[in-house]
Amino acid sequence: MTLPENSTPFDGYDGTAQRGPKLDEPAPLFTARTTLGTRALEDYRGQWVILFSHPADFTPVCTSEFIAFQNAMSDFEALNCSLIGLSVDSVFSHIAWLESIETKFDVKVTFPVIEDVSMAVSTAYGMIHETSSSTATVRSVFVIDPDGVLKALTHYPLAVGRSVKELLRLLKGLQLSAKEDVAVPAEWQPGDDVLYNPPCLFNDALDNSGKKAWYYRKVANDTGEADESQS
Image 1 (tube, rainbow, N blue to C red):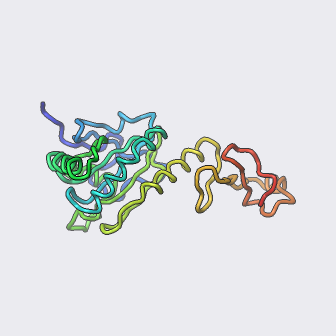
Image 2 (image 1 turned 90 degrees about the vertical axis):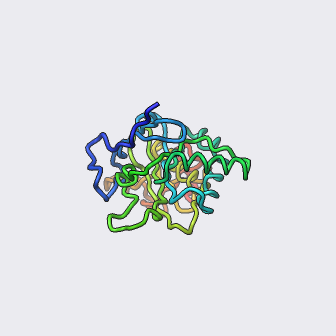
Image 3 (image 1 turned 120 degrees about the horizontal axis):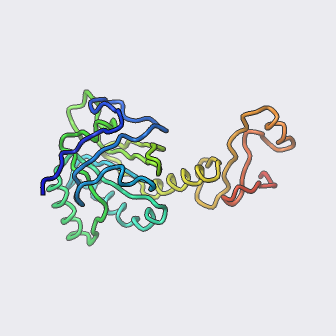
């Protein structure tokens, strides 16, 4: 079987651009060779996607992250979210590394990992700075909604691993915000009170008279019902 070269993008992005996508823009489309065969971003339309990159195979922090992501797979699947890994190593290196993880740690990685030797996908997503002589900075996370729109992105340094629990919290917050038109406050955890988005009109602000702050209105139980205590 002849596998395709990674190609990006299909939606008008310049593949040589370094800026990467911005929030609430369409995520750059790609078709790529992975450990599970050819995958395209369009294959995941209708699902949430977390695309995450790592600097290199057979590295300690990345190994810990892959184990953590795989152990949380059922949690992501319950949220209609697919995981896609990526690094600039070849698919053959990916396969050898994943086989080693399974042998040494008894964890079988079941999500696809993109081969990005040409750095086409990494470049389209702005993961590699144009003046960088190394790909070691490629540790990024992109959260893409079911319509293919980028809703969150984070970049991490080489020496600090990501928190899968925080990514799950972020995903749940994004989904709740999209569903209920609310916002989630600092330190929010699923089930905690959330916040109404601030009113855009003067009369709407007056309707909140008697409350502690017109711009900080709580909603209880993630249901959209007002919290009368306003505590």
